[in-house]
Image 1 (cartoon, rainbow, N blue to C red):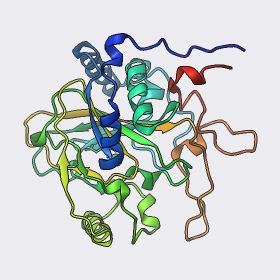
Image 2: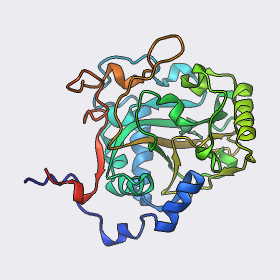
Image 3: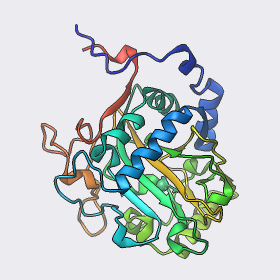
Image 4: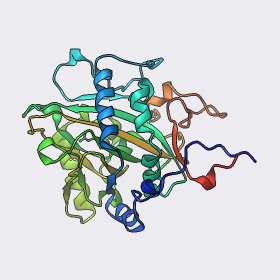
Length: 309
Ligand SMILES: O=C(O)CCC(=O)C(=O)O
Ligand SMILES: [Fe+2]
């Protein structure tokens, strides 16, 4: 039996930063978790520098083809909110920081999974322009975009590059909404929020809450530098204006548990739900897109017990 050590064990100091059993229960009940300080100031500052270089055009490689729903801001788009997908693929300096084992270990505990892989990374820049409509992120949950993924345990790590509070338009969770039963979903939910009607999304949230007999409790995540906000793939979230006078900079790191795989998910028009990966990743032996392709979906955490070959 061979053992492939894909990461060193955590240090004792890092172990102390993992969520406690109580934190894991909190996440299961509320659908979100604000971590301890997982990144040092030096690591966060390195993210700022690496993403500055990315915005200046630095790439270690570029995507071999352009997927249909790629978010890819460039200077010609102007001072709107910037979204850039696949930064972990295109930029090694960014990837090196995002793949910190401690981050994967925290996600593994929350998702109660033995393995965590990157699913997607989106670099986000919310300019400090009051009234900029693209700065508003309407209510949505991430699983809506991931219908072609089999897992219900995927989660997102929202990593700001500075203290991030309400005045910056921080990410805001709808408490406990991951446990709601969904009504009124139609195929438009697989479209990205940027393409959708905001009032329709606000109304969808209200209708879903009413259907579940739930109050809508909105929790703005006040995130100190180096801390990370996690949310379950069915937790409703959104964010508002940036009135801070400073840009709100972050990476949204979408994560999958080891068991996640492509599944066929038929839409009402007879076509199958797709994800951008489907035109990029290698195929499984039975011909499906492989959401474990190490080039696009690298493993960032594997429990030691699972590391045996
Ligand atoms: O930028 C935001 O405030 C929300 C980002 C988001 O939707 C996510 O991290 O899943
Ligand atoms: Fe989201």
